[in-house]
Image 1 (tube, helix red, strand yellow):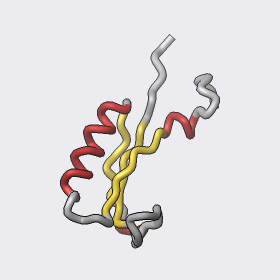
Image 2: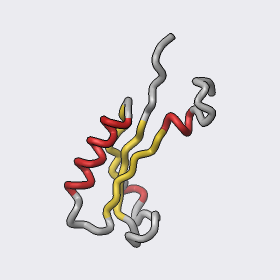
Image 3: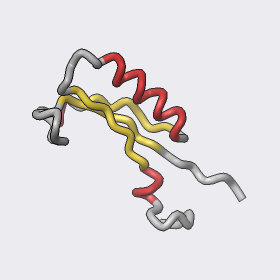
Length: 77
């Protein structure tokens, strides 16, 4: 049996208000990529987040795609 993939999606963008999760421009989102595990996604997230630290409106996120694709965790759609 093969090991399951725990895919993670990293993206970011400028928020209208730093206290809310509403992006200023959806067409201007920074799609960082899809990563095979949390550790590699976190490294990419940390790098992007640190590079934009001077912009209080810029936020990056890690989405646990594996939880969206397989919410029951049983390896089936």
